[in-house]
Each structure stands twice: as C-alpha cells, then as structure tokens.
Image (cartoon, rainbow, N blue to C red; front, side, top):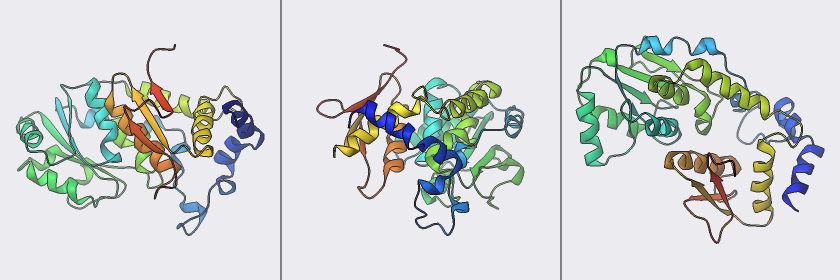
Length: 274
C-alpha cells in the first residue's frame, strides 16, 4: 500500500474517532485489569490552572538541576539546549559530569529537581545522594506518587495514566521550559492546539501522514528507521523513545536509530518548511 492509500484507510476505518472515543476498539487490554486503567490521559487537553503557580515556587533560584533517567528527563534535555545557562541535568554516572553538576548545586541560588515517574528509580536517587548535602527546601520532586523523603509542598504529582514518553505534557516536560523563561500560557496553548489539530478527521490532521509513513514501513517489514534533527540531538532522543515504545517492545515494533539515513527510510525534523 502507498502512503496515500494508508492515509485514506485511516480515515475510512475511523481510527482517529475510535482513539479518542472508543479506545477499546483499537487497543488490546493486555496486562491491565480493565480499560479504565489504560494510560491514555495524554490525549486530554491541559488546564492552565494546574501550572500557573510553578514560576512563583521557584522564584528565588537562577539555576535548576534536574536528576532523572529515560523519559523522565528527556524534555529537560531539550530545554537545556535552549536555556543552557539555566537548565542543567544529570542522567548518568560520568565522573566529569557529576563534578560539573556538583559545582552548580553548591551555588546558593540553585535548586535540585528529582524526576522519577514511579518514585522508585534507584539510579536517580543514587545520583541525588552523590551531589551531597543540599538544603531540604531547595530540593523538589516530580513523580506520579508522593514520596515521604521529599517535602510535600515541593512535590509535583503527575497523572498516573500518562506514560513517561508523553511526559512532555506533564510537569516533567512543562516545568523545565517555564523555568527556562517560556510563558506558561504559550506552552499550554500550543499543547492544546496540537491536541486539537490531531483530532481533525481529514488528511489535514498533521499526525496522519506520520502514522501512514510509520505503518508503511512496518507493513513492508522495514523495521529499522532513521531519525534526524538538524540542530537538537535531544529531540531525536525523545522521538526515538516515542516511536520505539509506542510501536511495540520486545522486537515487535519499529527500531529507530538516530543520525542514520541511507539505506534506511528516515524521518527528518527541521524548521525548514522545504
């Protein structure tokens, strides 16, 4: 099937309507006990009231250190690219990186934000302990559950039914950009606009060509997919995780590779409309 034919098939079978209104017609229940447990809250619009107090909570700081692993830190990496003097992250045990972050953490106007969706990521808490003593008031926590090790007023709880790879639309993804200096209203409006556009029942829906392209590769048995971004490697990392985990684990889906073009089909992310 051509990509155009797949796009038409998506519309004919009303995949978009089913996704938003009747997901049980698309997804297998899998290990979930019921469809009520299904992690689909990433499709909901955001309420700006849930994010308006963030800037005030951090107003006494000038530098922000995020500690986390995998999807919990992917949006932070993107934010650090745009705001390198404000946003820092630690996601590995590289000695030089730890020393660099330790130096920043000792500055009086710095805050540490521990990011762990499950609240049980061992590596994240080890990295936090490596940084040494820090005023309890200057440590924050983002998770989908409260942890008694952290001050409750410094804790931001995310919805349980939003998988880590969609953390861009939760505190994991939004807080770094707010602290970087992006207006919270603009962030929420853009996310909700993207949701609105992805509900369009026509080929004008920006998601449909991408879905059709990915499915065409899978349909042809072409499991390896290249991902390229002209400027920001962290965008590629996020897209790589998004595609690999969304299309299937245990070798059942597509296998995206960064910075690979020929001989594989590839997606290119650029500001160039041409």
